Amino acid sequence: MQTEMAGLIKADLAALTNEAQRLAIAPAVEPAVPGGQGDFSFAQTLKNAVRSVDDQDQAAAVKMADVETGKSDDLVGAMLASQQASLSFSMLMQVRNKVMGAVDELIKLPV
Image 1 (cartoon, rainbow, N blue to C red):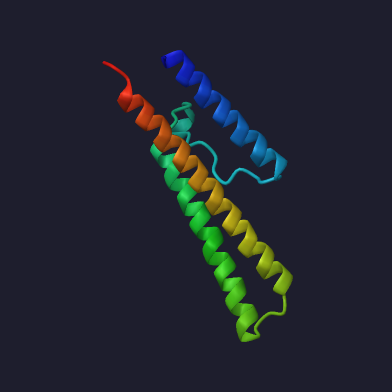
Image 2 (tube, rainbow, N blue to C red):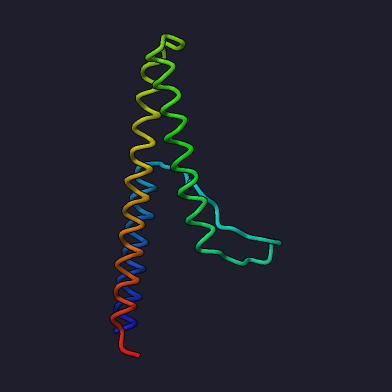
């Protein structure tokens, strides 16, 4: 059961990675490597991802506000920033759903 679930998780992660590469989205977050020792903090990585998505959303909101108030005439840039923020949020929600599904499966495992 554990091997099957690990295989499913690996397949889902591979699918997400392929989709991100297909969309040519640069990784929003690099793995946390405190002290250069190769330590990986999943919680910190998720915090960084949420912060990055929030930063993109705020930047898009500023660009849209500038276009609406007449400070800028870059409507295309504002719309692109808005779409990028929307895609980043959607991807973050997909990752969240996959993680929650994996946690639910782990909880169901017999001890």
